[in-house]
Image (cartoon, rainbow, N blue to C red; front, top):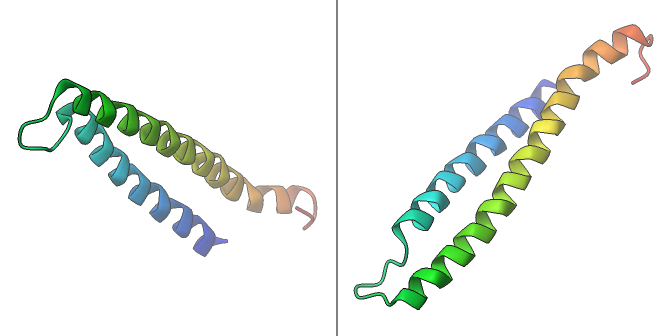
Length: 82
């Protein structure tokens, strides 16, 4: 059980770092030398979509982590059946 919790926490940290980079990319915009306004719009659209996906993944992992943390408690209360 502990290994699963550590794996979920590590995955959440990695996704959080990628999300931070995505936010920086969203704020900065296109990384071209001379970007046009439509290039910025494309980047913001893509970065916004990726941000929503990453936030959804973080939320799902948070619920999984809560479930994993409650599992030993449920096993004691129910006599071993989770």
